[in-house]
Amino acid sequence: MTDPLPSAVEELRGLLTIEELDTDLYRGAPSAEGPGRVFGGQVVAQALAAAARSMAEGKQAHSLHAYFLRAGDTTRPIVYRVLRDFDGGSFANRRVVAMQGGLPILNLAASFHRTEQGFAHAATMPDVLPPEACLDLASALEASGQPMPPAMLERLAAFEVRPGPPSPSGADGSGTPSQFLWFRLARPMQADETMARVVLAYASDFALVTTAVLPHPVSFFSPKLQVASLDHAVWFHAAPPVDDWLLYFMDSPWSGHARGFARGSIFDRAGTLVASVAQEGLCRFVGAEKGASAA
View 1 (tube, helix red, strand yellow):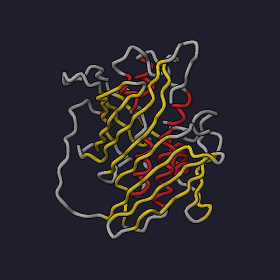
View 2: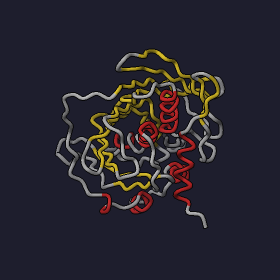
View 3: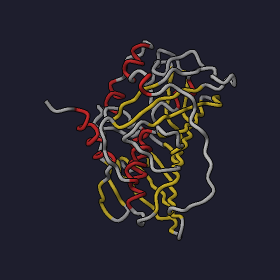
View 4: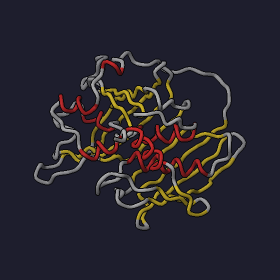
Protein backbone atom coordinates (compact mmCIF):
# COMPACT_ATOMS: atom_id res chain seq x y z
CA MET A 1 0.00 0.00 0.00
CA THR A 2 1.34 3.45 -0.92
CA ASP A 3 2.30 5.73 1.99
CA PRO A 4 0.03 8.81 1.60
CA LEU A 5 2.50 11.24 3.20
CA PRO A 6 5.18 11.34 0.45
CA SER A 7 2.35 11.56 -2.06
CA ALA A 8 0.83 14.53 -0.22
CA VAL A 9 4.19 16.33 -0.14
CA GLU A 10 4.68 15.76 -3.87
CA GLU A 11 1.13 16.99 -4.51
CA LEU A 12 1.95 20.14 -2.56
CA ARG A 13 5.10 20.66 -4.64
CA GLY A 14 2.99 20.22 -7.78
CA LEU A 15 0.37 22.67 -6.49
CA LEU A 16 3.03 25.31 -5.81
CA THR A 17 4.91 24.76 -9.10
CA ILE A 18 3.10 27.04 -11.52
CA GLU A 19 2.86 26.57 -15.30
CA GLU A 20 4.20 29.23 -17.69
CA LEU A 21 1.60 30.21 -20.33
CA ASP A 22 3.44 33.15 -21.88
CA THR A 23 5.93 35.81 -20.85
CA ASP A 24 5.04 36.83 -17.27
CA LEU A 25 1.77 34.88 -17.46
CA TYR A 26 1.34 31.72 -15.36
CA ARG A 27 -1.31 29.26 -14.28
CA GLY A 28 -1.63 27.61 -10.89
CA ALA A 29 -3.33 24.22 -10.67
CA PRO A 30 -6.52 23.87 -8.61
CA SER A 31 -6.16 22.30 -5.18
CA ALA A 32 -7.20 18.75 -4.32
CA GLU A 33 -9.87 20.03 -1.93
CA GLY A 34 -13.54 19.58 -2.68
CA PRO A 35 -15.63 22.48 -4.02
CA GLY A 36 -15.29 25.60 -1.90
CA ARG A 37 -13.14 28.67 -1.29
CA VAL A 38 -9.46 28.55 -2.18
CA PHE A 39 -7.13 28.59 0.84
CA GLY A 40 -5.55 32.03 1.03
CA GLY A 41 -2.08 30.60 1.63
CA GLN A 42 -2.28 28.75 -1.68
CA VAL A 43 -2.95 31.93 -3.68
CA VAL A 44 -0.22 33.86 -1.87
CA ALA A 45 2.29 31.03 -2.40
CA GLN A 46 1.46 30.55 -6.07
CA ALA A 47 1.65 34.32 -6.65
CA LEU A 48 5.08 34.42 -4.98
CA ALA A 49 6.17 31.49 -7.15
CA ALA A 50 5.06 33.42 -10.25
CA ALA A 51 6.98 36.53 -9.15
CA ALA A 52 10.10 34.45 -8.49
CA ARG A 53 9.97 32.90 -11.97
CA SER A 54 10.78 36.30 -13.49
CA MET A 55 13.69 36.97 -11.13
CA ALA A 56 17.37 36.92 -12.07
CA GLU A 57 19.55 34.39 -10.28
CA GLY A 58 21.00 35.58 -7.00
CA LYS A 59 17.96 37.42 -5.62
CA GLN A 60 15.49 35.89 -3.17
CA ALA A 61 12.22 37.26 -1.81
CA HIS A 62 12.61 39.19 1.42
CA SER A 63 9.03 40.44 1.71
CA LEU A 64 5.55 40.18 0.25
CA HIS A 65 2.32 42.08 0.81
CA ALA A 66 -0.98 40.73 -0.46
CA TYR A 67 -4.62 41.83 -0.51
CA PHE A 68 -7.41 39.29 -0.87
CA LEU A 69 -10.14 40.72 -3.11
CA ARG A 70 -12.52 37.85 -3.89
CA ALA A 71 -12.95 34.26 -2.79
CA GLY A 72 -11.29 31.86 -5.23
CA ASP A 73 -12.92 28.66 -6.51
CA THR A 74 -11.04 25.45 -5.58
CA THR A 75 -12.27 23.63 -8.69
CA ARG A 76 -10.70 26.08 -11.17
CA PRO A 77 -7.07 27.00 -11.96
CA ILE A 78 -5.82 30.51 -11.16
CA VAL A 79 -4.04 32.71 -13.69
CA TYR A 80 -1.19 34.94 -12.47
CA ARG A 81 0.01 38.02 -14.37
CA VAL A 82 3.41 39.37 -13.29
CA LEU A 83 4.39 43.05 -13.68
CA ARG A 84 8.13 43.79 -13.57
CA ASP A 85 8.08 47.10 -11.73
CA PHE A 86 11.78 47.42 -10.89
CA ASP A 87 15.11 45.67 -11.39
CA GLY A 88 18.03 47.23 -9.55
CA GLY A 89 21.47 46.05 -8.62
CA SER A 90 20.46 45.02 -5.09
CA PHE A 91 16.67 44.94 -5.11
CA ALA A 92 13.88 44.04 -7.52
CA ASN A 93 10.10 44.40 -7.22
CA ARG A 94 7.24 42.50 -8.79
CA ARG A 95 3.49 42.93 -8.73
CA VAL A 96 1.24 39.93 -9.33
CA VAL A 97 -2.48 39.84 -10.08
CA ALA A 98 -4.20 36.51 -9.46
CA MET A 99 -7.32 36.04 -11.60
CA GLN A 100 -10.25 33.66 -12.02
CA GLY A 101 -13.02 34.18 -14.54
CA GLY A 102 -11.41 37.43 -15.72
CA LEU A 103 -11.65 39.00 -12.25
CA PRO A 104 -8.78 39.65 -9.79
CA ILE A 105 -8.97 37.61 -6.58
CA LEU A 106 -5.63 38.75 -5.10
CA ASN A 107 -3.04 41.48 -5.60
CA LEU A 108 0.49 40.79 -4.40
CA ALA A 109 3.67 42.87 -4.31
CA ALA A 110 6.97 41.15 -3.61
CA SER A 111 10.47 42.51 -3.12
CA PHE A 112 13.65 40.55 -3.82
CA HIS A 113 17.17 41.22 -2.53
CA ARG A 114 20.61 39.90 -3.39
CA THR A 115 22.54 38.37 -0.49
CA GLU A 116 24.40 41.00 1.54
CA GLN A 117 26.13 41.11 4.92
CA GLY A 118 25.27 43.76 7.51
CA PHE A 119 24.40 44.51 11.12
CA ALA A 120 22.32 41.74 12.66
CA HIS A 121 20.08 41.17 15.68
CA ALA A 122 16.91 39.14 16.20
CA ALA A 123 14.26 38.37 18.78
CA THR A 124 14.77 35.20 20.79
CA MET A 125 12.46 32.21 20.53
CA PRO A 126 9.70 32.13 23.17
CA ASP A 127 9.97 29.51 25.88
CA VAL A 128 7.29 27.04 24.79
CA LEU A 129 6.71 23.30 24.83
CA PRO A 130 8.80 21.39 22.27
CA PRO A 131 6.98 19.62 19.43
CA GLU A 132 7.46 16.24 21.10
CA ALA A 133 5.33 17.45 24.03
CA CYS A 134 2.44 18.72 21.86
CA LEU A 135 -0.49 16.75 20.44
CA ASP A 136 -0.95 16.44 16.69
CA LEU A 137 -3.56 18.82 15.30
CA ALA A 138 -6.38 16.28 14.88
CA SER A 139 -5.95 15.05 18.46
CA ALA A 140 -5.73 18.60 19.81
CA LEU A 141 -8.95 19.60 18.05
CA GLU A 142 -10.70 16.44 19.19
CA ALA A 143 -9.61 17.11 22.79
CA SER A 144 -11.10 20.61 22.57
CA GLY A 145 -14.38 19.26 21.16
CA GLN A 146 -13.82 20.65 17.66
CA PRO A 147 -13.79 18.10 14.81
CA MET A 148 -11.23 18.52 12.04
CA PRO A 149 -13.01 20.09 9.00
CA PRO A 150 -12.52 17.94 5.86
CA ALA A 151 -11.07 20.89 3.89
CA MET A 152 -8.44 21.37 6.59
CA LEU A 153 -7.50 17.70 6.41
CA GLU A 154 -6.81 18.09 2.68
CA ARG A 155 -5.01 21.42 3.16
CA LEU A 156 -2.66 20.12 5.83
CA ALA A 157 -2.08 16.62 4.45
CA ALA A 158 1.50 17.46 3.46
CA PHE A 159 2.37 18.81 6.92
CA GLU A 160 2.77 17.58 10.45
CA VAL A 161 1.21 20.20 12.73
CA ARG A 162 1.37 20.20 16.53
CA PRO A 163 -0.37 23.10 18.30
CA GLY A 164 0.45 24.06 21.86
CA PRO A 165 -2.03 25.28 24.49
CA PRO A 166 -3.29 28.81 23.68
CA SER A 167 -3.09 31.76 26.08
CA PRO A 168 -6.33 33.68 25.43
CA SER A 169 -5.54 36.36 28.03
CA GLY A 170 -1.81 36.64 27.43
CA ALA A 171 0.69 34.50 29.28
CA ASP A 172 2.82 37.55 30.12
CA GLY A 173 -0.05 39.36 31.83
CA SER A 174 -0.40 41.88 29.00
CA GLY A 175 -3.85 40.66 28.06
CA THR A 176 -2.66 40.00 24.50
CA PRO A 177 -3.98 36.61 23.29
CA SER A 178 -1.36 34.29 21.87
CA GLN A 179 -0.93 30.75 20.61
CA PHE A 180 1.76 28.67 18.96
CA LEU A 181 2.17 25.63 16.78
CA TRP A 182 5.02 23.58 15.45
CA PHE A 183 4.93 22.48 11.82
CA ARG A 184 7.10 20.74 9.25
CA LEU A 185 6.60 18.93 5.99
CA ALA A 186 5.39 15.39 6.63
CA ARG A 187 8.24 14.02 4.52
CA PRO A 188 11.41 15.79 3.29
CA MET A 189 10.92 17.82 0.10
CA GLN A 190 14.53 19.00 -0.19
CA ALA A 191 13.24 22.28 -1.55
CA ASP A 192 15.63 24.88 -2.94
CA GLU A 193 15.66 28.40 -1.42
CA THR A 194 12.89 29.67 -3.69
CA MET A 195 10.54 26.73 -3.10
CA ALA A 196 11.25 26.84 0.66
CA ARG A 197 10.00 30.43 0.73
CA VAL A 198 6.95 29.48 -1.35
CA VAL A 199 6.13 26.62 1.04
CA LEU A 200 6.54 28.95 4.02
CA ALA A 201 4.24 31.51 2.38
CA TYR A 202 1.63 28.73 2.04
CA ALA A 203 2.01 27.69 5.70
CA SER A 204 2.06 31.27 7.00
CA ASP A 205 -1.73 31.45 6.61
CA PHE A 206 -2.23 28.54 9.04
CA ALA A 207 -4.32 29.64 12.04
CA LEU A 208 -2.98 33.22 12.15
CA VAL A 209 -6.27 35.11 12.20
CA THR A 210 -7.75 32.59 14.66
CA THR A 211 -5.54 34.26 17.28
CA ALA A 212 -7.79 37.33 17.13
CA VAL A 213 -10.77 35.17 18.14
CA LEU A 214 -9.14 33.49 21.17
CA PRO A 215 -10.34 35.88 23.92
CA HIS A 216 -13.93 35.98 22.68
CA PRO A 217 -16.81 33.60 23.56
CA VAL A 218 -17.12 31.93 20.16
CA SER A 219 -15.40 28.97 18.52
CA PHE A 220 -13.45 29.66 15.33
CA PHE A 221 -15.47 26.97 13.53
CA SER A 222 -18.81 28.25 14.84
CA PRO A 223 -21.55 29.06 12.31
CA LYS A 224 -21.95 32.32 14.26
CA LEU A 225 -18.57 33.52 13.03
CA GLN A 226 -17.64 34.61 9.51
CA VAL A 227 -13.88 34.73 9.06
CA ALA A 228 -11.78 35.54 6.00
CA SER A 229 -8.28 36.90 5.36
CA LEU A 230 -8.22 40.52 4.15
CA ASP A 231 -4.51 41.13 3.75
CA HIS A 232 -1.31 39.24 4.49
CA ALA A 233 2.36 40.18 4.76
CA VAL A 234 5.49 38.07 5.17
CA TRP A 235 9.09 39.17 5.74
CA PHE A 236 11.66 36.44 5.03
CA HIS A 237 14.76 36.79 7.22
CA ALA A 238 16.46 33.53 6.19
CA ALA A 239 15.88 30.47 4.05
CA PRO A 240 13.38 28.43 6.10
CA PRO A 241 14.27 24.75 6.69
CA VAL A 242 10.75 23.48 5.96
CA ASP A 243 11.78 19.82 6.26
CA ASP A 244 12.48 20.36 9.98
CA TRP A 245 10.32 21.67 12.83
CA LEU A 246 9.43 25.37 12.68
CA LEU A 247 7.79 27.22 15.56
CA TYR A 248 4.96 29.60 14.61
CA PHE A 249 4.27 31.93 17.54
CA MET A 250 1.23 34.19 17.05
CA ASP A 251 -0.37 37.01 19.02
CA SER A 252 -3.19 39.47 18.43
CA PRO A 253 -2.80 42.98 19.88
CA TRP A 254 -6.12 44.25 18.53
CA SER A 255 -9.55 43.37 17.18
CA GLY A 256 -12.57 45.57 16.48
CA HIS A 257 -14.98 46.82 13.80
CA ALA A 258 -15.51 43.19 12.62
CA ARG A 259 -11.76 42.85 11.93
CA GLY A 260 -8.94 41.16 13.80
CA PHE A 261 -5.20 41.79 13.55
CA ALA A 262 -2.57 39.15 14.28
CA ARG A 263 1.22 38.91 14.13
CA GLY A 264 3.41 35.85 13.74
CA SER A 265 7.06 34.99 14.29
CA ILE A 266 8.50 31.83 12.75
CA PHE A 267 11.63 30.28 14.29
CA ASP A 268 13.65 27.24 13.29
CA ARG A 269 14.36 24.50 15.84
CA ALA A 270 17.69 26.15 16.74
CA GLY A 271 15.89 29.38 17.70
CA THR A 272 16.72 31.48 14.61
CA LEU A 273 13.98 33.89 13.54
CA VAL A 274 13.40 32.98 9.88
CA ALA A 275 10.25 35.00 9.09
CA SER A 276 7.79 37.55 10.46
CA VAL A 277 4.12 37.62 9.45
CA ALA A 278 1.18 40.01 9.87
CA GLN A 279 -2.44 39.63 8.85
CA GLU A 280 -5.78 41.38 9.22
CA GLY A 281 -8.92 39.33 8.77
CA LEU A 282 -12.66 39.67 8.79
CA CYS A 283 -14.04 38.41 12.12
CA ARG A 284 -17.76 39.07 11.79
CA PHE A 285 -20.25 37.77 14.32
CA VAL A 286 -23.45 36.75 12.52
CA GLY A 287 -26.75 35.22 13.59
CA ALA A 288 -26.63 31.43 13.89
CA GLU A 289 -29.49 31.17 11.47
CA LYS A 290 -27.44 32.83 8.70
CA GLY A 291 -24.43 30.56 9.01
CA ALA A 292 -20.96 31.17 7.69
CA SER A 293 -17.92 29.21 6.65
CA ALA A 294 -14.51 29.84 8.12
CA ALA A 295 -11.68 30.71 5.73
